[in-house]
Image (cartoon, rainbow, N blue to C red):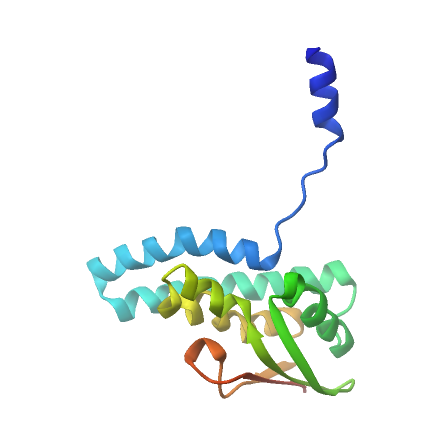
Length: 166
């Protein structure tokens, strides 16, 4: 009986959590740490350090993704937005422009913002998620530049992503 049980476990392939699920797990660890550091060193300094670390991780993730895909062009970035960032209906995206040099879209619904609100952590949402976007792009392709003037996380009706390839 024991051999069957071990055999059964070997056949079960663990599934990777979605990006939204990873952000939920990370938030439940990161926010208490940020809060503790804020009590000790001040809120502004704690958020600045956390943002720097998170942006460094995002930059490294962008580089890894480009290597994994074997491409770091706009088409690959558009696929990341559709397939990875919007996985599990985490984002509702309206594409506005998609060329080899530009990618422009609006996020009209953000489950990441909804998640942080649900967890009582909305004030940390920008630091934990939105602050990653430009750094991810830099790691993915150093010639990519992101312009964004508003986010749902900060209370806007939509996020306005404008990527340009220099």
